Amino acid sequence: MGLFNGMYKNYGFPKDKVLEWQSLVTGTRINNVRMTKQQLVSATEMIVDSHRKIIADCVRLVNETLTPSVFFDRYDLLIEEMYALIPFEPFYNFSQSIKEQAIDLQEKREQNEKAFINKIYLSTVEAAKSLKTEKGRQARIDKFFDIMLAYKNRMHINNWEYLCTLKQ
Image (cartoon, rainbow, N blue to C red; front, side):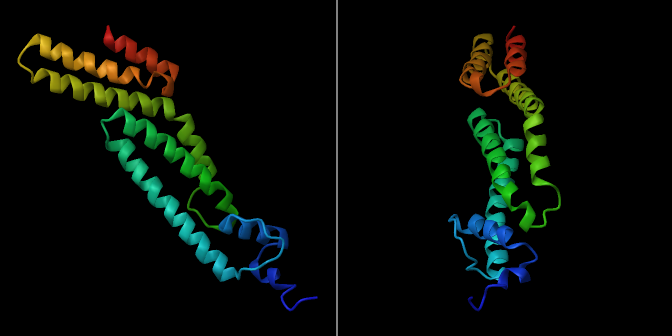
């Protein structure tokens, strides 16, 4: 038997969990422990930090944008990044369950979309008010609905119906 056979015992996890952790950070399935606990911790911190930066950027953009493509693309990326962190939960001390946060984001998607629709619609109406002619004001609002039509398949059906009521 090799010199490092019992090494995984110093990791605080059974060997199968250490191998899972190692595979997670390397992206490669390896049948023996090749990384030290410190290497695994450092790699995990770097990976988590990278995902957190993307998540923070997505949250900021989802909350601030008035551009539908940015909202929908970043909302999808936000959920994707949250789910990418779930496998790290046994090996990293998150302040809250990542899985619960990801599920919460999905469950609140409908209401977050509606809030976005309201925000962009009010912004459009305000911008339209500053135009000189009724025709110009109506064109601005019509353009909003044309743009939103492109996102029909990406929004919750209730939000599409809500958007249609705004048009009337």
